[in-house]
Length: 396
Ligand code: AMP
Image (tube, rainbow, N blue to C red; front, top):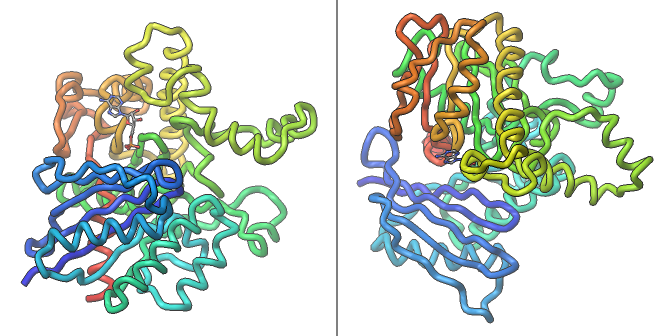
Protein backbone atom coordinates (compact mmCIF):
# COMPACT_ATOMS: atom_id res chain seq x y z
CA UNK A 1 0.00 0.00 0.00
CA UNK A 2 1.45 3.37 -0.97
CA UNK A 3 1.91 6.03 1.66
CA UNK A 4 0.96 9.68 1.51
CA UNK A 5 3.39 12.49 2.26
CA UNK A 6 2.20 16.02 2.93
CA UNK A 7 4.65 18.83 2.21
CA UNK A 8 4.05 22.25 3.76
CA UNK A 9 5.80 25.46 2.75
CA UNK A 10 4.47 28.29 4.90
CA UNK A 11 5.27 31.97 4.57
CA UNK A 12 3.94 35.15 6.15
CA UNK A 13 0.94 35.50 3.83
CA UNK A 14 0.56 32.08 2.23
CA UNK A 15 0.76 28.36 2.92
CA UNK A 16 1.61 26.09 0.01
CA UNK A 17 1.05 22.35 0.17
CA UNK A 18 1.79 19.29 -1.97
CA UNK A 19 0.43 15.83 -1.34
CA UNK A 20 2.58 12.98 -2.64
CA UNK A 21 1.92 9.29 -3.11
CA UNK A 22 4.80 6.88 -2.71
CA UNK A 23 3.86 3.88 -4.83
CA UNK A 24 6.64 4.57 -7.38
CA UNK A 25 10.40 4.77 -6.73
CA UNK A 26 10.10 8.52 -6.29
CA UNK A 27 7.06 10.18 -4.67
CA UNK A 28 4.45 11.35 -7.21
CA UNK A 29 2.35 14.44 -6.63
CA UNK A 30 -1.43 13.90 -6.20
CA UNK A 31 -2.50 17.45 -5.34
CA UNK A 32 -0.78 20.75 -4.88
CA UNK A 33 -2.22 24.06 -3.87
CA UNK A 34 -2.13 27.01 -1.55
CA UNK A 35 -3.93 29.35 0.72
CA UNK A 36 -2.88 32.88 -0.20
CA UNK A 37 -3.83 36.30 1.07
CA UNK A 38 -3.72 35.35 4.76
CA UNK A 39 -4.78 38.16 7.13
CA UNK A 40 -6.32 40.04 4.18
CA UNK A 41 -8.60 37.95 1.97
CA UNK A 42 -7.62 34.27 2.10
CA UNK A 43 -8.13 32.30 -1.09
CA UNK A 44 -7.71 28.57 -1.43
CA UNK A 45 -6.74 26.95 -4.71
CA UNK A 46 -5.55 23.48 -5.68
CA UNK A 47 -4.61 21.43 -8.74
CA UNK A 48 -4.57 17.70 -9.30
CA UNK A 49 -1.80 15.53 -10.73
CA UNK A 50 -2.79 16.44 -14.30
CA UNK A 51 -2.58 20.16 -13.45
CA UNK A 52 -6.38 20.62 -13.56
CA UNK A 53 -7.75 23.23 -11.19
CA UNK A 54 -9.78 21.33 -8.57
CA UNK A 55 -10.36 24.12 -6.07
CA UNK A 56 -10.62 27.88 -6.28
CA UNK A 57 -12.39 29.26 -3.23
CA UNK A 58 -12.49 32.56 -1.39
CA UNK A 59 -13.04 31.96 2.32
CA UNK A 60 -16.27 33.39 3.83
CA UNK A 61 -15.67 36.93 5.08
CA UNK A 62 -16.41 35.93 8.70
CA UNK A 63 -13.88 33.05 8.68
CA UNK A 64 -10.60 33.56 10.58
CA UNK A 65 -7.84 34.73 8.26
CA UNK A 66 -4.87 33.25 10.12
CA UNK A 67 -2.45 30.35 9.56
CA UNK A 68 -4.22 28.17 12.08
CA UNK A 69 -7.57 28.28 10.31
CA UNK A 70 -5.94 28.02 6.87
CA UNK A 71 -4.27 24.75 7.86
CA UNK A 72 -7.49 23.31 9.25
CA UNK A 73 -9.32 24.26 6.06
CA UNK A 74 -6.59 22.77 3.88
CA UNK A 75 -6.50 19.55 5.85
CA UNK A 76 -10.28 19.18 5.72
CA UNK A 77 -10.17 19.64 1.97
CA UNK A 78 -7.38 17.08 1.60
CA UNK A 79 -9.10 14.53 3.83
CA UNK A 80 -12.19 14.72 1.68
CA UNK A 81 -10.03 13.75 -1.34
CA UNK A 82 -7.91 10.93 0.03
CA UNK A 83 -10.77 8.53 0.75
CA UNK A 84 -9.79 7.17 4.12
CA UNK A 85 -6.08 6.89 3.30
CA UNK A 86 -3.86 8.45 5.90
CA UNK A 87 -0.84 10.69 5.80
CA UNK A 88 2.35 8.86 6.80
CA UNK A 89 4.56 11.88 7.33
CA UNK A 90 4.52 15.66 6.99
CA UNK A 91 7.60 17.48 5.68
CA UNK A 92 8.03 21.19 6.39
CA UNK A 93 10.23 23.64 4.61
CA UNK A 94 12.06 25.58 7.31
CA UNK A 95 14.04 28.56 6.22
CA UNK A 96 16.77 28.57 8.87
CA UNK A 97 18.59 25.74 10.55
CA UNK A 98 21.46 27.92 11.79
CA UNK A 99 24.57 25.98 12.72
CA UNK A 100 22.41 23.54 14.71
CA UNK A 101 20.74 21.64 11.87
CA UNK A 102 22.67 20.30 8.91
CA UNK A 103 20.14 17.59 7.98
CA UNK A 104 16.37 16.98 8.21
CA UNK A 105 15.07 16.45 11.74
CA UNK A 106 12.13 14.51 13.11
CA UNK A 107 10.07 17.03 15.11
CA UNK A 108 10.30 16.66 18.88
CA UNK A 109 9.72 19.26 21.63
CA UNK A 110 13.51 19.80 21.62
CA UNK A 111 13.52 20.50 17.89
CA UNK A 112 10.68 23.02 18.28
CA UNK A 113 12.65 24.73 21.04
CA UNK A 114 15.70 24.67 18.74
CA UNK A 115 13.72 26.33 15.96
CA UNK A 116 12.42 28.99 18.34
CA UNK A 117 15.97 29.77 19.36
CA UNK A 118 16.71 30.49 15.69
CA UNK A 119 13.92 33.09 15.30
CA UNK A 120 16.33 36.03 15.76
CA UNK A 121 18.25 34.83 12.66
CA UNK A 122 15.10 34.79 10.47
CA UNK A 123 12.43 36.81 12.29
CA UNK A 124 10.31 37.32 9.17
CA UNK A 125 10.17 33.62 8.22
CA UNK A 126 10.98 31.19 11.02
CA UNK A 127 7.83 31.91 13.12
CA UNK A 128 5.64 31.10 10.08
CA UNK A 129 7.47 27.81 9.64
CA UNK A 130 6.95 26.87 13.29
CA UNK A 131 3.20 27.68 13.47
CA UNK A 132 2.09 24.93 11.04
CA UNK A 133 4.17 22.37 12.94
CA UNK A 134 2.31 23.21 16.14
CA UNK A 135 -1.12 23.29 14.50
CA UNK A 136 -0.59 19.97 12.69
CA UNK A 137 0.71 18.39 15.88
CA UNK A 138 -2.67 19.18 17.38
CA UNK A 139 -4.70 18.12 14.34
CA UNK A 140 -2.73 14.95 13.46
CA UNK A 141 -1.00 13.97 16.72
CA UNK A 142 0.05 10.54 15.45
CA UNK A 143 1.66 11.69 12.21
CA UNK A 144 5.42 12.29 12.40
CA UNK A 145 6.65 15.65 11.15
CA UNK A 146 10.05 16.41 9.65
CA UNK A 147 11.77 19.77 9.25
CA UNK A 148 13.75 20.27 6.04
CA UNK A 149 16.07 23.24 6.12
CA UNK A 150 16.88 25.71 3.38
CA UNK A 151 20.28 26.34 4.94
CA UNK A 152 21.32 22.72 5.55
CA UNK A 153 22.88 22.10 2.13
CA UNK A 154 25.29 25.00 2.66
CA UNK A 155 26.71 23.73 5.95
CA UNK A 156 29.38 21.94 3.89
CA UNK A 157 30.90 25.31 2.93
CA UNK A 158 34.42 25.60 4.32
CA UNK A 159 34.62 27.99 7.28
CA UNK A 160 36.49 30.47 5.10
CA UNK A 161 33.41 30.84 2.90
CA UNK A 162 31.03 31.14 5.84
CA UNK A 163 32.82 34.09 7.42
CA UNK A 164 32.49 37.84 7.09
CA UNK A 165 35.63 39.83 7.84
CA UNK A 166 34.12 41.12 11.06
CA UNK A 167 35.83 40.42 14.39
CA UNK A 168 35.86 36.61 14.62
CA UNK A 169 33.72 36.58 17.79
CA UNK A 170 30.72 37.83 15.81
CA UNK A 171 30.58 34.56 13.87
CA UNK A 172 31.14 32.43 16.98
CA UNK A 173 29.01 34.20 19.57
CA UNK A 174 26.37 36.00 17.53
CA UNK A 175 26.01 33.57 14.63
CA UNK A 176 26.76 36.35 12.12
CA UNK A 177 27.98 34.27 9.21
CA UNK A 178 27.07 33.33 5.67
CA UNK A 179 24.40 30.62 5.90
CA UNK A 180 23.02 30.64 2.36
CA UNK A 181 19.47 29.71 1.30
CA UNK A 182 17.60 27.85 -1.49
CA UNK A 183 19.40 24.76 -0.20
CA UNK A 184 16.49 22.41 -0.98
CA UNK A 185 16.60 23.50 -4.60
CA UNK A 186 20.37 22.95 -4.85
CA UNK A 187 20.04 19.61 -3.11
CA UNK A 188 17.45 18.52 -5.67
CA UNK A 189 19.69 19.60 -8.57
CA UNK A 190 22.66 17.78 -7.00
CA UNK A 191 20.47 14.67 -6.63
CA UNK A 192 19.57 14.52 -10.34
CA UNK A 193 22.96 15.55 -11.76
CA UNK A 194 24.40 12.00 -11.69
CA UNK A 195 21.70 10.86 -14.17
CA UNK A 196 22.35 13.85 -16.43
CA UNK A 197 26.12 14.34 -16.49
CA UNK A 198 28.52 12.41 -14.27
CA UNK A 199 31.31 14.92 -14.92
CA UNK A 200 29.08 17.70 -13.59
CA UNK A 201 27.92 15.57 -10.67
CA UNK A 202 31.44 14.65 -9.62
CA UNK A 203 33.17 17.86 -10.67
CA UNK A 204 32.86 21.64 -10.46
CA UNK A 205 29.33 22.87 -11.09
CA UNK A 206 27.82 26.30 -10.71
CA UNK A 207 24.05 26.28 -10.18
CA UNK A 208 22.02 29.44 -10.83
CA UNK A 209 18.66 29.39 -9.03
CA UNK A 210 17.06 32.39 -10.74
CA UNK A 211 13.50 33.12 -9.66
CA UNK A 212 11.68 35.79 -7.76
CA UNK A 213 14.35 35.06 -5.16
CA UNK A 214 17.69 34.34 -6.78
CA UNK A 215 20.99 32.87 -5.69
CA UNK A 216 23.85 30.79 -7.03
CA UNK A 217 26.04 28.07 -5.58
CA UNK A 218 29.35 26.48 -6.48
CA UNK A 219 29.34 22.71 -5.95
CA UNK A 220 32.26 20.31 -5.81
CA UNK A 221 31.17 16.71 -6.21
CA UNK A 222 27.59 17.78 -5.42
CA UNK A 223 28.52 19.49 -2.15
CA UNK A 224 28.26 23.22 -1.62
CA UNK A 225 31.52 25.17 -1.40
CA UNK A 226 30.18 28.70 -1.68
CA UNK A 227 26.85 30.40 -2.25
CA UNK A 228 25.86 33.97 -3.00
CA UNK A 229 23.28 34.47 -0.27
CA UNK A 230 24.74 35.20 3.11
CA UNK A 231 23.42 35.98 6.59
CA UNK A 232 20.02 36.69 5.08
CA UNK A 233 18.35 36.07 1.75
CA UNK A 234 19.21 39.64 0.75
CA UNK A 235 22.80 39.12 -0.35
CA UNK A 236 24.21 38.16 -3.75
CA UNK A 237 22.13 38.56 -6.88
CA UNK A 238 19.51 41.28 -7.34
CA UNK A 239 16.01 39.75 -7.17
CA UNK A 240 12.41 40.63 -7.94
CA UNK A 241 12.24 43.21 -5.16
CA UNK A 242 15.44 42.59 -3.15
CA UNK A 243 18.61 44.57 -3.80
CA UNK A 244 21.18 41.78 -3.62
CA UNK A 245 24.81 42.61 -2.88
CA UNK A 246 25.15 46.11 -1.47
CA UNK A 247 27.88 48.10 0.23
CA UNK A 248 27.06 48.07 3.97
CA UNK A 249 28.08 51.74 3.93
CA UNK A 250 24.90 52.49 1.98
CA UNK A 251 22.83 51.31 4.94
CA UNK A 252 24.79 53.58 7.28
CA UNK A 253 24.25 56.48 4.90
CA UNK A 254 20.50 55.79 4.74
CA UNK A 255 20.38 55.87 8.53
CA UNK A 256 22.72 58.74 9.26
CA UNK A 257 22.13 61.06 6.36
CA UNK A 258 18.64 60.24 5.07
CA UNK A 259 17.42 59.50 8.61
CA UNK A 260 15.63 56.31 7.59
CA UNK A 261 14.80 53.93 10.42
CA UNK A 262 15.33 50.15 10.43
CA UNK A 263 11.80 49.37 9.26
CA UNK A 264 12.02 51.80 6.35
CA UNK A 265 15.39 50.42 5.30
CA UNK A 266 14.07 46.87 5.55
CA UNK A 267 11.15 47.77 3.27
CA UNK A 268 13.47 49.50 0.82
CA UNK A 269 15.96 46.62 0.60
CA UNK A 270 13.46 43.73 0.61
CA UNK A 271 10.39 45.12 -1.13
CA UNK A 272 11.30 48.14 -3.29
CA UNK A 273 14.64 47.26 -4.82
CA UNK A 274 15.93 44.67 -7.32
CA UNK A 275 14.18 44.44 -10.69
CA UNK A 276 11.28 46.50 -9.35
CA UNK A 277 13.48 49.28 -8.02
CA UNK A 278 15.64 49.52 -11.12
CA UNK A 279 12.78 49.34 -13.63
CA UNK A 280 10.35 51.43 -11.58
CA UNK A 281 7.35 49.31 -12.52
CA UNK A 282 7.67 45.52 -12.20
CA UNK A 283 9.50 42.74 -10.39
CA UNK A 284 8.54 40.22 -13.06
CA UNK A 285 11.15 39.45 -15.71
CA UNK A 286 8.42 38.84 -18.29
CA UNK A 287 7.08 42.38 -17.91
CA UNK A 288 10.55 43.84 -18.21
CA UNK A 289 11.40 41.88 -21.34
CA UNK A 290 8.12 42.92 -22.96
CA UNK A 291 8.74 46.59 -22.24
CA UNK A 292 10.47 49.28 -24.31
CA UNK A 293 11.38 51.28 -21.23
CA UNK A 294 15.14 52.03 -20.94
CA UNK A 295 14.96 51.35 -17.22
CA UNK A 296 13.44 47.92 -17.83
CA UNK A 297 16.37 47.22 -20.15
CA UNK A 298 18.77 48.44 -17.48
CA UNK A 299 17.18 46.11 -14.89
CA UNK A 300 17.43 43.11 -17.23
CA UNK A 301 21.08 43.91 -18.01
CA UNK A 302 21.94 44.47 -14.35
CA UNK A 303 20.45 41.06 -13.52
CA UNK A 304 22.34 39.14 -16.23
CA UNK A 305 25.58 40.96 -15.51
CA UNK A 306 25.28 40.09 -11.80
CA UNK A 307 24.78 36.41 -12.68
CA UNK A 308 27.90 36.56 -14.87
CA UNK A 309 30.02 38.13 -12.15
CA UNK A 310 28.84 35.69 -9.50
CA UNK A 311 29.38 32.74 -11.85
CA UNK A 312 32.99 33.77 -12.41
CA UNK A 313 33.50 34.37 -8.71
CA UNK A 314 32.05 30.95 -7.80
CA UNK A 315 34.18 29.31 -10.52
CA UNK A 316 37.25 30.88 -8.94
CA UNK A 317 36.22 29.52 -5.55
CA UNK A 318 35.79 25.94 -6.83
CA UNK A 319 38.86 25.95 -9.10
CA UNK A 320 37.07 26.19 -12.46
CA UNK A 321 33.76 25.16 -13.98
CA UNK A 322 32.75 21.89 -15.65
CA UNK A 323 29.05 22.72 -15.83
CA UNK A 324 26.62 25.57 -15.39
CA UNK A 325 22.99 24.79 -14.47
CA UNK A 326 20.04 27.18 -14.78
CA UNK A 327 16.97 26.55 -12.65
CA UNK A 328 13.84 28.21 -11.09
CA UNK A 329 11.34 30.55 -12.82
CA UNK A 330 13.78 32.72 -14.78
CA UNK A 331 16.48 30.07 -15.15
CA UNK A 332 14.03 27.50 -16.52
CA UNK A 333 11.92 29.76 -18.73
CA UNK A 334 13.84 32.82 -19.79
CA UNK A 335 15.95 32.04 -22.87
CA UNK A 336 17.00 35.71 -23.13
CA UNK A 337 18.62 35.82 -19.70
CA UNK A 338 20.35 32.48 -20.31
CA UNK A 339 21.65 33.75 -23.65
CA UNK A 340 22.94 37.02 -22.18
CA UNK A 341 24.69 35.17 -19.36
CA UNK A 342 26.20 32.51 -21.62
CA UNK A 343 27.48 35.05 -24.13
CA UNK A 344 29.23 37.00 -21.39
CA UNK A 345 30.82 33.78 -20.13
CA UNK A 346 32.28 32.76 -23.50
CA UNK A 347 35.77 33.80 -22.34
CA UNK A 348 35.49 31.13 -19.65
CA UNK A 349 34.57 28.38 -22.14
CA UNK A 350 30.77 28.53 -22.49
CA UNK A 351 29.49 27.90 -26.04
CA UNK A 352 25.72 28.21 -26.12
CA UNK A 353 23.64 26.13 -28.55
CA UNK A 354 21.20 28.89 -29.51
CA UNK A 355 18.62 26.52 -31.00
CA UNK A 356 18.61 24.28 -27.93
CA UNK A 357 18.37 27.35 -25.69
CA UNK A 358 15.26 28.55 -27.54
CA UNK A 359 13.35 25.29 -27.06
CA UNK A 360 10.62 25.46 -24.39
CA UNK A 361 10.41 22.31 -22.32
CA UNK A 362 9.81 21.21 -18.75
CA UNK A 363 12.43 18.46 -19.07
CA UNK A 364 16.09 18.74 -18.06
CA UNK A 365 18.14 19.57 -21.15
CA UNK A 366 21.60 20.53 -22.36
CA UNK A 367 21.81 23.94 -24.05
CA UNK A 368 25.54 24.15 -24.83
CA UNK A 369 27.27 22.96 -28.00
CA UNK A 370 28.85 19.51 -27.94
CA UNK A 371 32.35 21.00 -27.87
CA UNK A 372 31.63 23.62 -25.21
CA UNK A 373 34.31 23.38 -22.51
CA UNK A 374 31.62 24.09 -19.94
CA UNK A 375 28.41 22.05 -20.31
CA UNK A 376 25.30 24.17 -19.74
CA UNK A 377 21.99 22.69 -18.61
CA UNK A 378 18.46 23.78 -17.80
CA UNK A 379 17.15 21.57 -15.00
CA UNK A 380 13.71 22.29 -13.51
CA UNK A 381 13.97 22.33 -9.74
CA UNK A 382 11.59 20.52 -7.40
CA UNK A 383 11.92 21.62 -3.81
CA UNK A 384 8.66 19.95 -2.74
CA UNK A 385 9.83 16.57 -4.02
CA UNK A 386 13.12 17.06 -2.16
CA UNK A 387 11.17 17.69 1.06
CA UNK A 388 8.97 14.63 0.45
CA UNK A 389 12.05 12.46 -0.10
CA UNK A 390 13.77 13.83 3.00
CA UNK A 391 10.66 13.36 5.15
CA UNK A 392 10.30 9.74 4.03
CA UNK A 393 14.00 9.03 4.55
CA UNK A 394 13.82 10.53 8.02
CA UNK A 395 11.06 8.16 9.19
CA UNK A 396 12.43 5.10 7.35
P1 AMP B 1 10.03 31.49 -9.13
O1 AMP B 1 10.24 32.37 -7.95
O2 AMP B 1 11.07 30.43 -9.28
O3 AMP B 1 8.63 30.95 -9.23
O4 AMP B 1 10.21 32.42 -10.41
C1 AMP B 1 9.31 33.46 -10.65
C2 AMP B 1 9.85 34.38 -11.69
O5 AMP B 1 10.18 33.68 -12.89
C3 AMP B 1 8.81 35.40 -12.14
O6 AMP B 1 8.79 36.50 -11.32
C4 AMP B 1 9.26 35.74 -13.54
O7 AMP B 1 10.08 36.87 -13.46
C5 AMP B 1 10.10 34.57 -14.00
N1 AMP B 1 9.55 33.89 -15.17
C6 AMP B 1 8.64 32.91 -15.22
N2 AMP B 1 8.39 32.55 -16.50
C7 AMP B 1 9.16 33.34 -17.28
C8 AMP B 1 9.36 33.48 -18.69
N3 AMP B 1 8.71 32.70 -19.56
N4 AMP B 1 10.24 34.40 -19.11
C9 AMP B 1 10.88 35.19 -18.24
N5 AMP B 1 10.75 35.11 -16.92
C10 AMP B 1 9.90 34.20 -16.43
